[in-house]
Image 1 (cartoon, helix red, strand yellow):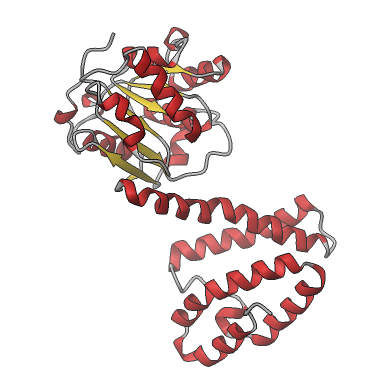
Image 2 (tube, rainbow, N blue to C red; image 1 turned 90 degrees about the horizontal axis):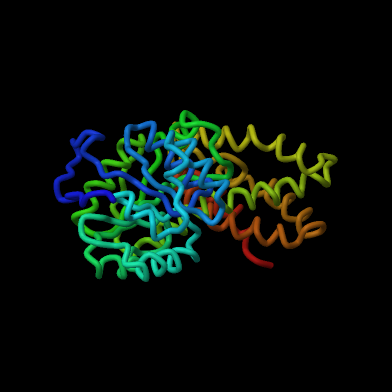
Length: 314
């Protein structure tokens, strides 16, 4: 059993040796990435539990720890680690916490965080009632594939934001972990987490949706689905580069940024005829883009507003 850890002793300058040992409940793509990156950064991973033993064993391999660190249940992890990360789906957090609470797994000197971007750390109040500080530690990154090695895991986390929320005594530890992983901590309040997560969903998940709708239009131009996506990827990559280099609103290009009413009218005429649902999406996004177009080129306000008039729902 791990001895209690003094979370109040951790500061931003504490070396990795001054951090708690870490265990994972959940061994999916996010958990494997975090475990591999933490181990590569010098943080000791000492336990993992998962519904899939295969996934748990893979996490142990990525973290460079022996197979006997794989636990038979979630309640074993706090006994083997000083900080437990719940890297399970949002809907499974409550069940994992309840399982460990029922086994009296939480105690002073041990801490727990979940990795949900949307949910508050109050989900962990059962652990708090047993003396365990609690919080949330959310990497603002998309994990669509499992890491192949620790180097790839670390690369996925470089420069990202970690959304942190929870007990004051625990936050310096979480800030230090974020920094060791190459990220930047963002301190959140519980009531702002839904906005934080909605921003992430719009920027990441809905970018996939827009790519799908764009590929659907290109399919009518002779490109199959995979070929359409490949054709659009350099355009999307160029937009990301422009955003990184120029920021908002200067990264905006296209007919609305130029006030090109004729092009927008042609777009909508064809969309209304062959893909009316996409036409509605085009209008909605266009209206949301108007403020950025005006901010980029205030001198072209009249032309941009004329183009914007075409975006009103017919």
